[in-house]
Amino acid sequence: NWEFVPGRVRLTIEYTFPLKRTRDHDNLVARSIGMVNGLKKVFFEDDSTDCLELVVLPPRVEKGQKSTRLTLEGL
Image (tube, rainbow, N blue to C red; front, side, top):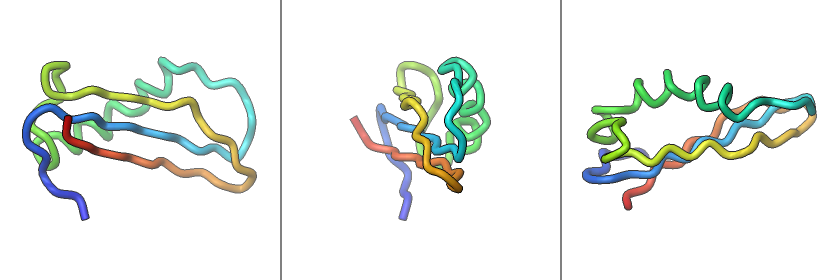
């Protein structure tokens, strides 16, 4: 049920991993760039800091689970 969001937006990304181990935040941000590029122009105007606030949350750990949750909201 995603729709284009005009103006400034916040994209929050939360990763879930099956194993507990240390993951660098900058690596999680780098991992997110492909998703951001795939979503821009379809769901929001641009990925510049004028249009997008990117939030990458600390990863969750759930045994046997691996997922990525995206939340897009207008600001």
